Image: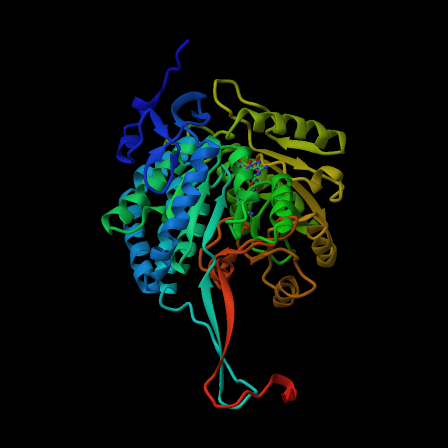
Length: 512
Ligand SMILES: NC(=O)c1ccc[n+]([C@@H]2O[C@H](COP(=O)([O-])OP(=O)(O)OC[C@H]3O[C@@H](n4cnc5c(N)ncnc54)[C@H](O)[C@@H]3O)[C@@H](O)[C@H]2O)c1
């Protein structure tokens, strides 16, 4: 039986240059794709929207060779010139924000506001990268030797491989590509196979700008595939840096393989994020922040709130308000106005939700609201709150990546911090308090052990200006703002002798 497609239902796809059947490989010169076919499925009804033909290993090889051929030309451009290209790319994303935001919403299942928010992150990172292009400064270091000059020069790494996850199918790529490009690198991207339309659409927007500027298009290549293509990148010495976003399970494999060949990694892996509501917290703020962080993207953000610890003095009242708020959450088609929670991305996630709830109940959890898979053709589940008495229960060590929120009671902040830090992951954590002592304890050395440490805001929804990433099994990577750009460059410590003698460091004498 031939495949039917719902492509025509979504006119905005054509604005993005997409078709019912798409090439999923841009090899630096042309669009191709003779590898596996990936179906783009709408999680709201499981209809197939379109298909994308992935890359073969041979096409991958051509792409890498094209990147290497284009390297010198791209590197030679003055940094602010590359910044100007990225600025133009930002404008192109501005133009396509509405259409691309809807595509993210359609293909992932997140609501349109969050889909557009992702595109806004790309626009923001373009602005930031453009600014960086005039300020990627090295430093001058005083030399101990007379007539010597010592400086640090930052040079590009060359080829950067980006492997990304389904839940942020455009922004994570944007964070990596824009900074890598400004730094002088050429990027190969392998997006998640289940969000391949997003990858094709973003690549088209960028290639168009490179083409208009008559610059090497191999500054970006796309090789859609599964673990096969991902593994080619990971094992390929021609990529000094692999930036991987995905599960801790796959990240561990990637990390081992890349470090075996002495490559560098940026690892952005799973989270298991906690929010602590102190006795002196603003309860209304904590309520709103918890609902957005736990229900947003249907619990499929790496920064989603999983564990909510409430001071016993506020426990009953906040629990009641939370349950009431959850009952008012509109679950439905993420493209519709008014929807707050879309479907899970795939059927596999439904099984994780069901199995997870079974284990939670076996480990003493009590479902307060939700807990059911909803009828219909889509992947809808009820956002769920579970009351746990044991904050160290084994299930709490895992990231289920579904909208299940555990709520628990605590009496002492040190105990709550210990619970926050007791899981293997270390991405994001929040404290709600109006007490300065609590605040500085939380952000200091004996506070939260996560990469993102918030006060009076939830754990999800980071700004691009800060370095994004987490500790422990979250992988230790940092992307986006602050000095994350340094990871896309190699540091050369340069010492120049402008004198007529050869004094050695540490005063060593070596007279011939
Ligand atoms: N920390 C962060 O910044 C961050 C951001 C977004 C998502 N995530 C995490 O991502 C996970 C959800 O995403 P997912 O289900 O797409 O993750 P996943 O690990 O299943 O897949 C991620 C990517 O890795 C590829 N891949 C799979 N096997 C591979 C292999 N052996 N070698 C190389 N590549 C391989 C996949 O095709 C995909 O492109 C969650 O754990 C979430 O917390 C983390």
